Image 1 (cartoon, helix red, strand yellow):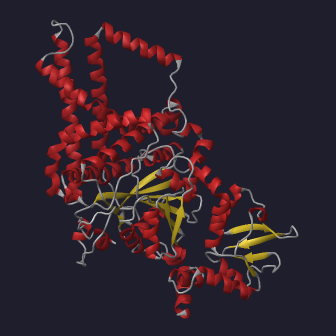
Image 2 (cartoon, helix red, strand yellow):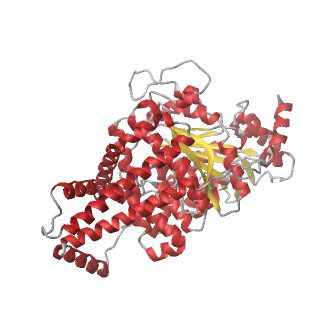
Image 3 (cartoon, helix red, strand yellow):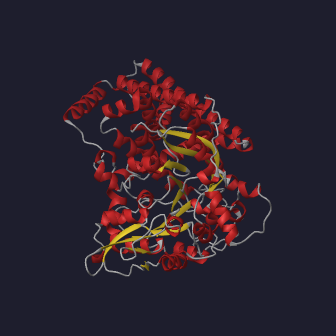
Length: 613
């Protein structure tokens, strides 16, 4: 066994201790105790008061990721404490770094993490909640998103007065402006869909050259999903000795914590309870984990995600083939429970059009991308340089994508797929879409605080893309019912202008009808292209329900606008573990079904977690 561990350690370029610990042959605490005895240095359990550590709380947070801590003994002398990881244990055992026995001690990473959380949880929480707000307040949704200056007030007042004085002309002008906006958005979507995407060159490194990869998953009330999630992550084709998987829980989520405890997880899994500070949002939890990330690259997944096993390797291939300005790689998301109903089918078509058609094309043209909320792979240092995620933005992914673009970083899309679960019932679907629309509104308002600076940093093409992708998506959902009402009024009663002004009626009729037709046609085409590339054209009939779907989107958008004004940081979580069907499980080798319980419900589920994991 030891010979096999040594052989694997050599092939991976790590210490054999990492192999033994990852294989659950020995615990990390037991190993460090034995290593300390072998080196004739003391083992430090870190059962010491806060006063024994001279580091500030902020530096104490950093100590966890570095694996190094500073203490003072009773005589005031400084003592270094090391939690070995990577090749540190091998170097210590070989004598490459001789330790003065009276000045150094060893401890385990678990005990160092517990010491940090016990004494610096407040600092970790403050960084997670307000790190971006403190460093770059103009990029955070925590501050007031918009200040109406005097010139803006005068322009708004003049526009209202003109609309009252010339209602027909004003209505036509607004219709022309909106129609041109939607046509531009239509052209951008078609351009992205028609742009050819090629598989990037592969520079697959040898196993001993693979970097440490950190995976972060923010979980809340996911007791039903964690078993399948852990099984799926365990199948990733990446050495577990070079993985760090951080599962971040909320303090009151006892159900998920108990479910994870039953799984008896060891390395590379680490459970972290997010500090109870700031808003209760996913980005805050991600920030807490980012401060503790040891990997050169960091990926983000959700509880329901089932990434393809080779996804980390394929993302790394792209990173190594590009320069340091490539900060993020987005994997393609697809819906797994497509046959759960028409909403799930429409969701499948949307995701296919977005991740299999539009975003790959935009990445080839090197335009800024609004990231999907999952399967984002980052250079860890670039992510930290960008300030991490905005804890006050409820669609932190779209905001971060634009912030990276403003910092001259690039984002690429890879062919690897992550399977996700979509809400198949109206109530959870509406809550999820409300949160998405509210976050996109926040993102637009935040980045438009200084439009000239935004245009300078993104360039003309990037600035227009931001307006169309972020602003246009929200605007189209808000005005869609107004366009329908306007078209209906023009066809039946006539516009609210003097009877002799029939020209306004004709103009409004053609503009409203043209905008609606262009929007429907483009979304239908994009969905067809995506479904064809996914080989799911049998579900294309759901696209015929697009008018009803758009009205639901409008409902969610107006609900989001109301929440933005009343409760901007409210996070309406999507419940997972409710899927009745699974494309991934259907295409997998048959395995026995098993019962999954969620929130006390005792109903037969599709064995998605088992088959896909």
